[in-house]
Amino acid sequence: MKITVLTCAPEMFESLMKDHVLDRAVSLGCLEIHIIDIRDYSGGCFRKVDDSPYGGGAGLILRCQPVLDALADAVKDAPGHAAVLVPGGRTFDQSVAEEYASLDHLVLICGHYEGMDERILEEAGELLSVGDFVLSGGEIAAMTVMDCVARLLPGVLKNESLKEESFSSGLLEYPQYTRPAEYKGKKVPEVLLSGNHEAIRRWREAAALEKTKKYRPDLL
Image 1: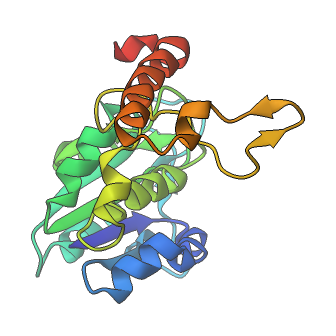
Image 2: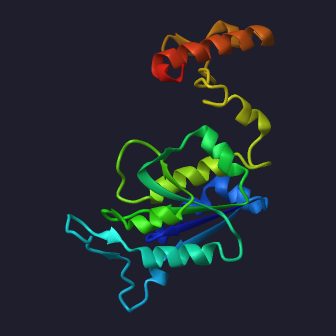
Image 3: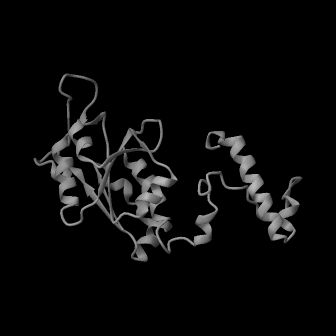
C-alpha cells in the first residue's frame, strides 16, 4: 500500500516516520509513504499557497492551484483515493481505517489556514474528519489516519492483537492488568489469575460490555 500526504508542513511528519508501527510497515515492504510539500507547486520565489477569500472574510484560504497540481502529480503514475482532512467530513473510525487498509493508494490532503478553496474539496474523493473539533491544520488528523491504517496492514502487528481491540467487536476493549497482582489495596480480578480460560473469556465479554455502558453507551 502507498500513502501520499499533501501538506504545507512536511517537517511535522519527520518524527512520525520513526514511529515503530509505521517504520515496521515500511521495513516489511507493505507500506510506502510519500510526503509532498504543497509549496513546491505554488510557483514564485515566495512559494505562496494562500490568499484572501473572494467576498471578504477573516483569515486566509488555501489556494486550489498548488494543491490540485500536487494532487495531479501524486496520482499521475499511481491512481488513488484522495481524502481531504476537514472538520465537516465523514467521521473517521475503525471501519473506515479497515476500508482504507485495503486500498492500493491513499492520498491525504491536509487543510491549513482558515480553510481551502472549494474546488479542492470538489476534486477529492471524499471529505474526512477525525472529530467534531477544529485543528490548526490537517497534519495531526492525517497522522492519526496513517497510524490507524498502518497497524492494520498484514504482518505489522500480530493477528491476536487486532482481534480483541476496542471497536473490533462494536464494544470497548475489556480491562487489562499486569504485575503486581495487588497495588495499594487494589487487586487484579481473581478470575484472571485462575488459569481457567473459559471463565476468563466470559469475564472479559461481560467486562467489555460493562465498560462500554459506562464510557461509551452510544456504541450500544
